[in-house]
Amino acid sequence: MSVFGAFDVSATGLTAQQLRMDTISENLANINTTRDGKGNVYKRKMVVFEEKAYPTFKETLGLAGQYIGKGVKVTRIVEDPSEGALVYDPSHPDANEDGYVMYPNVNTVTEMTNMIDATRAYEANVTMLNASKSMATRALSIGQ
Image 1 (cartoon, rainbow, N blue to C red):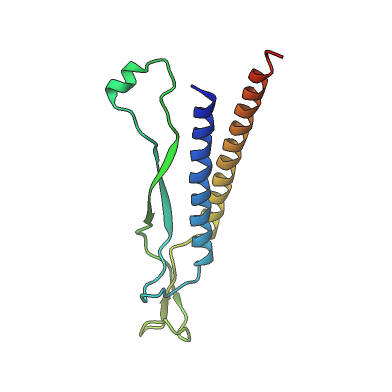
Image 2 (image 1 turned 90 degrees about the vertical axis):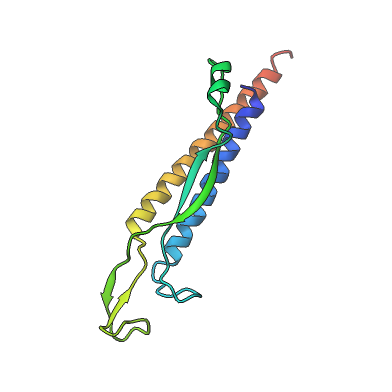
């Protein structure tokens, strides 16, 4: 694998984790949003990753023993289909006829755990980028 390939792989990981952090932040910001612009309760969003340029079986056999990955990409952002919590609050403007309000299906503990995971993955990609940069710099200084 070339040095630039290592940079590319790390860059895709950084970009994907940044989008994941943005999505988690959106979930946390809307934890009490009982009505969006369309009148619906906010649904928790999740990021789906996939290997970038997944090789075919023939390509995998031809590249056996070599590096074949090209990084990661975000394929889509999906809504969590689970239901939110019903809370009794008859004074709330979005309460139903029985006095219950449907809140989003966002759990603070889950989102904070996902945020820590995304932060650690981002840090790992930065460490890999710095290590690749250091190796490239040392390789350039061999002839001096």
